[in-house]
Image 1 (spheres, rainbow, N blue to C red):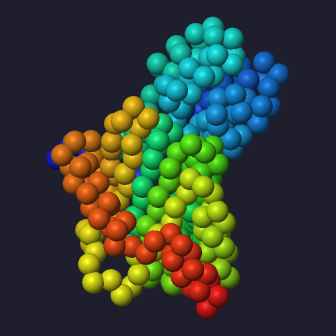
Image 2: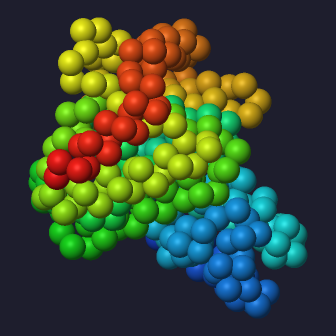
Length: 280
C-alpha cells in the first residue's frame, strides 16, 4: 500500500511460496550440473553459501542481480531469466522487504539508528534468538529457525560489502539491557566490539544523559547507492515503511546527521561500551 512517499505494508519477513521453491530447485539443479558446490557458486555470485541455500530451498527471494550473475556462471542459456519471470510472490510478501534487501546489496553507505534493540546486522545468534522469543504471538520452532537464518544471512553484508560504509548509532539504554540474560548480553557486546575493529564500521552511543535528541520519533535506516540514490526505512509495531520520496528522505537524513553530532564520538563510544561490558 502506498503511503506518503513510501511503501507501507503489514508484517516484515518474506514468505516462501511454491514458485520460489520451484525456482530454487531449478537453480540447485543447474548448479549441481555445473559441478559447483554452494560455496563455490556463492563466491561467483557474491553471496554466502547460506544465502545460496536459502534461495535454493525457496526461503529467500532471488532478485534480478542474482539472476544475471547466476546466468553468467551457469552458461548464460537464458533459462534462469525465463524461470524468474514466472516466479510469483506470496500475497503476504512485503514489498518494502524485497526492495530494501535489494537496495542494501547496492549500498555505498548504510546508516542505522536503534533505540529498542541491537541493530540486526550487529546481533549474535543468541541475542537474535532471545529477541525472537519475545515475539507476540509466540513463534513456533520452525518460524523461529527461519527468522534466525534470515537474520544471520543478512549479516553477510558486513563481510561481503567491504567497500560499504556502515554507521550505527545505538541508545545507551539498549546496551545496558539484559535481554536474554547477562551471558547473552556479554556475548553481544563482545561481538559489537569486534565489529568496531573493521575500518568500514562505525558505532556511536547516544548517552543516556542527553539533553538533545534528533531521533525521538524512533529507529530509522538510511542508505545511499553507488549511483547516488538515497532511501530510508522506518518501522512501527505492525508495519514497515520504505521511504522513497526525495523530500522525506532528506528530512530523515538531516535527523540522522544531527544525531551523529549529538552521540558520543566512536573512540569514546568504544570506551563506554567496554565499561558497560565490564559491569555485566
